[in-house]
Image 1 (cartoon, rainbow, N blue to C red):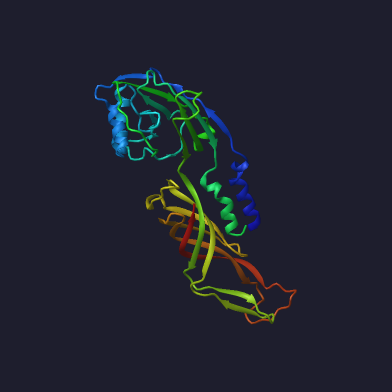
Image 2: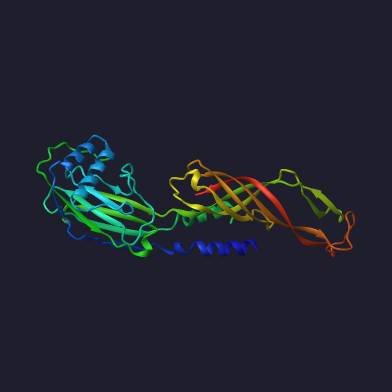
Length: 351
């Protein structure tokens, strides 16, 4: 029975492992682009200096202001891959998303939509020309990617050159992507930016990790029983006997978790750790468990406490048999009985 359940489980969750798909994404210029901006405040030069000094948040805030004043308002729900072509050797590329500027160099995206990814190239070269190539590669959810290991476990910024920026006219090129459905939740987006296609050296490259937040995870739950238990068994001499179990019997379970709030697998917090769990006991006994848990992340694993309830298949004497009675090998004195047990303990959770 347990073998059959594992086969079904593997079949459902490993369909996506059959192969990766790749597509070259070609964004289209938005209406009015490239935008010509008379940069009287020298916002482009200010942004250059802030980036040079390591004041990234101020630099990104200045680029936000420049883009908006050039005629393209930013939507906090969209992702903007922004390239600032200060010099050929100093070309920061990052992502503007939301209302804060602190994560510009983060390569994380959290599940794209069809039309919420943009490319913005800012330069003082007239018309802001650039060659852009983006390769999208599908990948599996972290839950699926780590599933095989789990089943096995249970046995089954660059250097720059200072220069004086001249001129006040700044150009802002904006292009919008149309993301195919299969690349929206889990994919890697590889960006190559050049001034011209025939250039041997790109201005800047980066790979962005588009991984949607997940509700599913799994782990090993180490459960204690809250009741004193006994088993009815046949002893070595053929006598029906009662065998006590330890009061604090530590029992391992393989469990699947469903989180009430989607989890960023690379930035976990206690607030998104609350989940319900369900699984089966490891070993020869078929004992399902359900429960409620939550905890903290230690980086490579999470440690959660949980409370729950398991149902064990145990022996019950048939009519006509008693404790202490000796039986022959041909006699079966038992019938199956379901025994519910309150459980609590710790879960080591992945990923």
